[in-house]
Image 1 (spheres, rainbow, N blue to C red):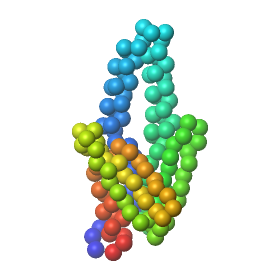
Image 2: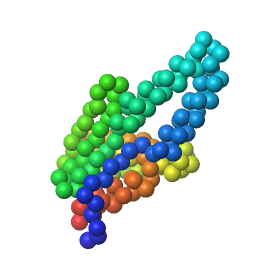
Image 3: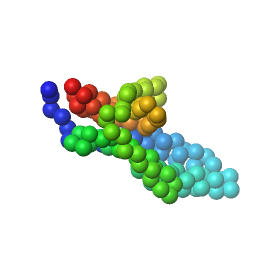
Length: 137
């Protein structure tokens, strides 16, 4: 049995966030003359990033044998605690855009629900899956 991490945190990949930021800045410049829509778009993006993207993550606690899934909302953060015994599958979804930014989507499947986190760093996702598989053996 190899080395097992005590806790694995998985968040949205910084490269993807930079891509979205650049796209929003370009669209803001294009739409700025149109009734200030560019400024409004820019403010909505930073509010969305702060309130939703930065608060959406997965925390895998090896010692407690649970996975916590945090999904950020505009004013609240929903969190679900999933015992590792109830996890049926961990799926990594690779896409064309994800390959450009070295990110994958991760889906945790249980019998009753699916938990999805898009645009996660591929390295973090592999680390999570490796720690989970090592814990199963």
